[in-house]
Image 1: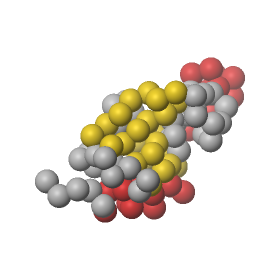
Image 2: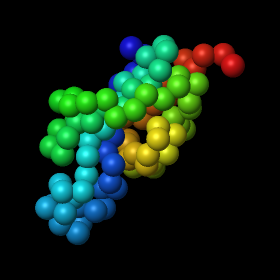
Image 3: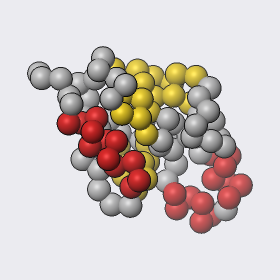
Image 4: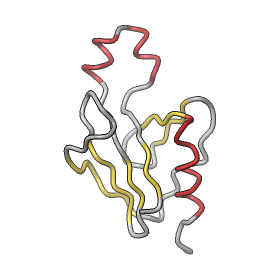
Length: 101
């Protein structure tokens, strides 16, 4: 494992419309980066730490960042995923060890 970070499917500002709306629409997506692939998991509606299923596998050659701002949105992993600033170090680490093309 080279890096791991949490992400979510809906932007943070949706919470301003109401917590119930956010909880119903949002899914947490833990992401694990290995030397062979990137795996996006489904964490459910309540937690970023419990893994329920594999959502998709992405080739290791995919660059996730560079991340910037308080919340970074990436579409490189198959769907728009929103990542908080506290996980930018993991994204940088994953991108820094990309295999040579």
